[in-house]
Length: 231
Image 1 (tube, one colour):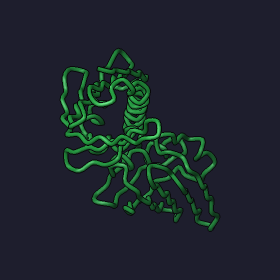
Image 2 (cartoon, rainbow, N blue to C red; image 1 turned 135 degrees about the horizontal axis):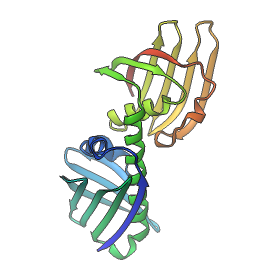
Image 3 (spheres, helix red, strand yellow; image 1 turned 90 degrees about the horizontal axis):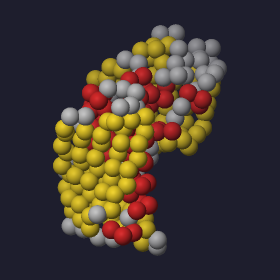
């Protein structure tokens, strides 16, 4: 069996982390090598040398005290991803037993690291995100600021299982905000002030890599009624 681990710091309770881990359909699309998810069948595609190895699995999820396990069982082998809280750290261990086991060291390291960082970012986003109330594809976001805007986009992207969307919002003073996310990346952000002044940011940044620097200087700090348009 080949095994690789990665640790990241998470200063939140296990209960907060459990919220993320208990929703694999929302979380799996942000795992490295993820290809698709249909029901409980998960497909990963792992590039190795000149080949792309495809793996299809059936997923089972289990929880214990301050730990969880995702078990992926397929014709080519068994992939196990374990999550464990060690003080303020989340330890993710990816283990593979099956086809190409000897060559899976680097892919497993990439897998464990990418998963750990994704879970950390979504956990942080859940904790710092302002109140988001969505009914279907409409709702309200309280007090968007440059500091919490990344958390809002991460939260909505997670809620939509990593799908493409456009977030449209209007404030009481007539300000308008629009954010377009495709293939897990924020491509465009537009803020229009009541006087018609328009701020446009073109980007190609992964949702998981968003931080407040991209939003600094934008005229936010308002409550917005929002609509989510799935693409």
